[in-house]
Image (cartoon, rainbow, N blue to C red; front, side, top):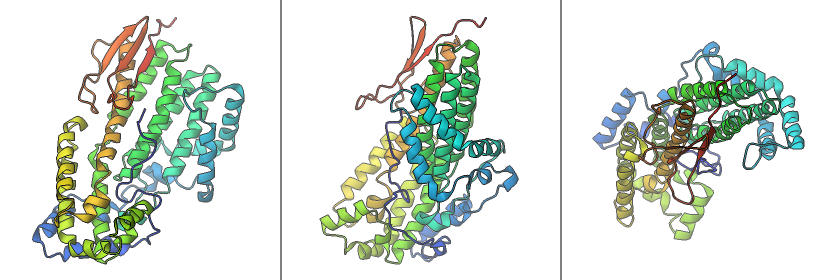
Length: 426
């Protein structure tokens, strides 16, 4: 339902980037502070006034006793996360969230092996705030090692939901769903694009769990009402899109400090390195990027301010601006004014990441519409899809509610939600 299986590679988000050291010394942005262009210095002052510089974002302000993140990290051995994620991936059904007897037992056995961690996570999530303390001053080298455990904890809750449904305990299944969404909320409120998009992928798994509960033949009006409340609460706490892009800009600021030292090759992914080598520009890239760094960074900061400010509007109202930026980059591609770092490294994946954010939100608005309609609400909670700008479509057919209109229609993207209208509880 997310129309994406992996996080696109915006600044600092590709696993095949070279192993940069922490380089926290770039956090104060010494090169930018000494830039000759007064516009750059003024923009830095403005960013700092908005508390958006790398060193400012790195400061953790939540006491441990109030911070769910402090209780969620360290639950699993770091060296085992990859293997556990791979094992849990194999246990998930490929399509519908349905388990045969043998598959369910395997999933349950996996869940039982990690029950202590699952319960500890639930206890931590009762704390009112969540912050993982990303060190933006370390730039691309900042540790995001909390993402894997969060995905694993969500899988444990999904398996719990499957067990509960097999035992006709839809309330317990709904509780696991709510925990999955709370885990996604913790990821999504970080001011960093990678955990924000990982939250979207986690919610895509929760989407399937919710659908399984809704379509269970024993589901009652009370169950639908409970699920409607869970989805509504989650949507009410949804973070502004701009949060992630404020952090993305901070990583970009850090990257330009690396460029000023002539070390831009250390920012390249393997794919980018090979592409530049095939184009015959790899050897010239560091000097060319360093020579034009002030102009390049100005282009980047002007563009990112426009991107951040555009987040005040729904995604469909931003797309024309995004097209204009892409067209401008394309037009400059063969000219001396082309911003090498911004145009080749930092901006190309912004548009797809924004699209993923919109699809994520549209999925859950569509659920809110479906559940409200199934309960007979006369007024649906959301009218227009943020992804497409078109109305959600609600139809009732043979006692079922169908919600469509939250897909793009491109590449067979026609998602649909079905909710059987429950009879009055006896």
